[in-house]
Amino acid sequence: MTANHTPTDETDNTNTTHVTCRICPTCAANALADGMTICRQCMRAYARQLTLLRHHLAVLQLVIRREVHLRERGGGRGSFAPLGIDVSAADLEAEVERLIDGICEAAGLPGGRWQRALPRLGANLRVLACLPDAADHLEGLIRLNGRLERVADRRPRLRRLVGVCDVCGAMVHAVQGEEWAVCGRCDSLLHLPSVRRAARRRLDVLHTTQTPSGAAVWVSRETGIDVTRDDVNNWIRSGRITAPKLENGYREFPILRLIELAEVKMDSKQE
Ligand SMILES: [Zn+2]
Ligand SMILES: [Zn+2]
Image (cartoon, rainbow, N blue to C red; front, side):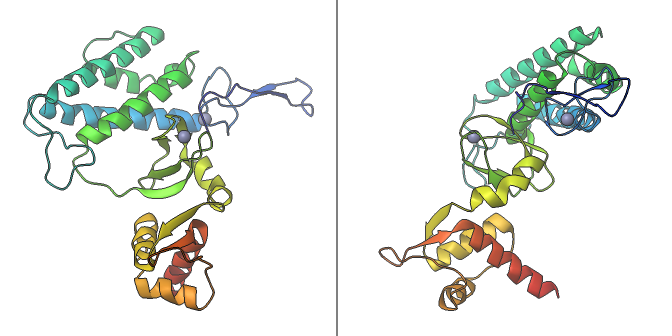
């Protein structure tokens, strides 16, 4: 689900007053209330994004002042970015302030430093949700929060497979409970509840090339369910999964079936 859907107009024929019902351009799921340009659910998401932004910016201050170090992307535990990269944290802050200023201006609110401007925005959500560019503002916040999270989030959080990007087909990983993600391959903004709903169908065609122990590690990581090499070997032996043999002990595992069997294992443990 991308955020650049055009709103569709549907006329409610059962109502004699002919109320025009437009669909929220951000989630493409809910109807818009009178005068609003995003739905109520997305307005609540907007509020959460503003809160998250305040948290991220507070941590970013420490990064800029070099009281904490940036974690290098993809680096191992305890690896730090080289000195000098903190400049990019300051750039990021400037970018955030430009977005906040833009929203304040559109809403007719005073701008200024984020410490004052953000609470002001939070107190005027209804106004923000009626602005012509509300969907763009929300998308801007989600994207910046995504970039800030890599810099400001000190807790390493586990990302799990939630589905497949419906624009480019790349696998999408997210922290449990998250609502939005930006596709790592094509940069589309993805509404995760929709991605999750479509996941079964989209994952059905995907395979992963692994040894049985590699498959066990892979599916444990993707589902958070503890799966061992013995489990995977049992599934193969009992014919519950069809994984054609390749060279050197590698097999081609159907992703969806691996996830389903891991879930069956978890369910049987809970009973
Ligand atoms: Zn919405
Ligand atoms: Zn994509």
